[in-house]
Length: 80
Image (tube, rainbow, N blue to C red; front, side, top):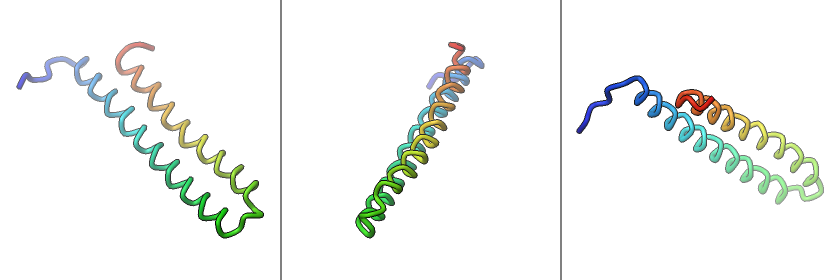
């Protein structure tokens, strides 16, 4: 197997790991949030409006972390 020879190759590896792990983390976070939302609505349907609002705030924060990882990965590969 060919060895990684330059810093650029390591930066590309780091960029891939950053965006991959951030995507998995955001997906897991949103999935767990949806599970909690569905359980809350099943228990107390009259509070669905407030619960959905809180979920959307949490989902936006989880996606923001994934977008930050995208920016970091683009910086690592030299596109920004």
